[in-house]
Length: 500
Image (cartoon, rainbow, N blue to C red; front, side, top):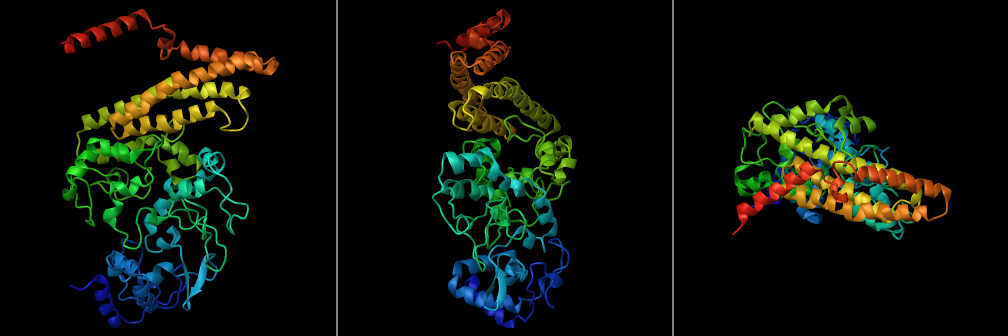
């Protein structure tokens, strides 16, 4: 049997000379990709043959990059006669452009480049939170990676003063780096390679299509696979892939993967498959009523990233994204439409009642009190962030444990909701945060500093109010008689049910 590469080699000689475009905008000489592909990815008119430039690329790369050419040869790009040059062509004004065998090209293929053909997809992605993921570069997370965890020991032309390898190899690989060009097409090694989904590209665009559509095959089947999302959506602060595996959805997927038709061009839930949903099913893929979307936030009704969950249109407004005009109720209807492909309305409505209740409970019992206590504690803390034990305790309460509980409830992962979520929050609130606040109060009162004494008294009053509230008074042994009686009755019922 002949390989894809051998078949490609046989096909090339009969291809006529075609594209000679040399701009990323598609404004090239006759035969350029901008002239041969009409409209966007939904267009039916495709390139009639490989361009001369791409044929030259393939002839060489078939020898030097055999696997790369094989992957491309199995792609839809190959079938559509879209070759190396059509994606990598560059304009003389592009910062990352360089001459390569008499052709001006760029290493990075950005969402702006992909958008020359995939116009709608590129536009939707640009308006999504995914494309903004690089904004983490100034957040608390990056303070941890660049300062607390790391040191400026990685020195490059782009970072002569040094940069933290912890940030480069960690945060930036998922969230994206600001790619720096250090010479004639040369990219700074601290910022490249990088397929972070919010990568800031030299052409001004944000994001990386290859974060999900791995080059050079760009397999739709791989993009729909849960593990594709799990590269970034995993770990202590957002373990979506672990939650998915625990959930009934994940169990059904693994048992019925052979029935999922993952490589179908048309992939409508309830029509082309019904065995299980994947991440893509719920957040991106088509339903009978909705088209595919590359804005993954348009079906979520809570943004669970902050210490206290907010509605997604609020966070979109802060980032000046188009989603600011789309309210959470409409987004919930969008997601319910996905759910209703397999579930009844009563089931879906009750699920959301449970989910909203968990969010409300987390807010009232831990997020609001925690935020209040941290504000009151500020005058008694070292001013440098993460220079205090309490900084780490509170950060992990909301950023790790609080997120886990909220994300798990949204995806029906009971073990992560409870044992990795609310249990951990409660344990650390009562055994770490409260004692640490009490230590601050004690030290403040004994300091002899009038301002600190005043701050300590205010913090004491705040802590007393929190602990005497109905949600926390059990900690002080002040459970109401009615509640204590109910707990005793429940214990009695349990013992009678399971007693030998």
